[in-house]
Image 1 (cartoon, rainbow over the protein chains, first blue to last red):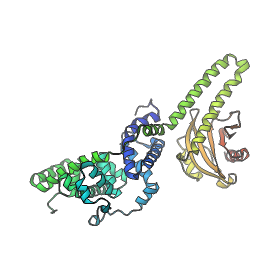
Image 2: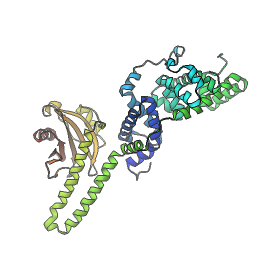
Image 3: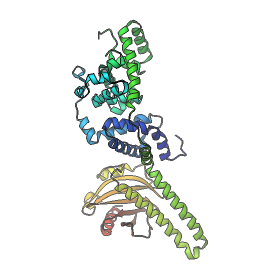
Image 4: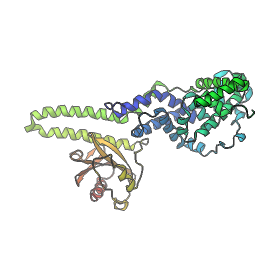
Length: 178
Length: 249
């Protein structure tokens, strides 16, 4: 990194292009616009304070998304989720969460993005976040593994089950097989 | 799905570009022969592209973006303000030097005003609920080692029972006062918060003031170090805290 610029300038250069992504991801985590803004603010403050610990040359996006997620996990909503027992080791017992609130009939009749948005909302949080980090944020499995603090194999299995669940809901729209 | 088909994890890794070249070649060879898996790959590509569009649905407002920008440069903003203040102080000092015989003392007065504002600003920043020190600990054996390698000096911290009654060490930060690395020790004193700045040489003491904006300043020197306490607690109690720190140097 250029040494002539201040730490704040270097942090700003890296963080500013990610503000929209961080806020969008925060909205998916907390499901409330005001809480999402607070979460991003707190995460940015923490990241700025810890910026000396960031290793130049490594992926800043993965680093700051991990801070965002860890900050979320210490919030009340995050603590509730972290207490949830995920069924990573029991894929046969997985079912799409809360299907009653997203009746398949509505999903089938709804077109495209709105249907998928609703399907994403119906996913359990630990499946939703992995598909968002992969498909939306285009992070590599290794980076997602670091952000979520789980093995790469768990990232792969969660992705597979998240996509399977989404395709089950959206099969008529996408025209593929689950 | 039969065992002959590619696993969902392999299909996903193929679509995500996560397979190694040999794995990808093997998967491609399978896809050339397996209509079901090929159809699955197409569906996954469709899904991935659609998720990217659908999930990008929460955009921050311009005002929110401005607040995010502000959150990423708190120290920078403060330093800029103080840099301006120092520049003004220097200009004033330059004029005063011309009349040094009569007005020389003003130069130090202006510098001390700037320094007081900088110290007070750092203290006010610690009072913010969203502000967390870099070291959150009441253990002096955690706080003191944290500064190793960060400061050009070392200092001692008193035993908890050597602190004034109702005073607890809550954490510490590394800050820069007048561009010098300075240890910031954070204390709670009953229901008040106190900041104690520890620095080297003649950078802290000499503020020539005891209160500003309702906050009290208490300063002392010991063993080549300077201690400056800032708090809205009773100045006598703040002085006792400073005394407990200088006593162990």
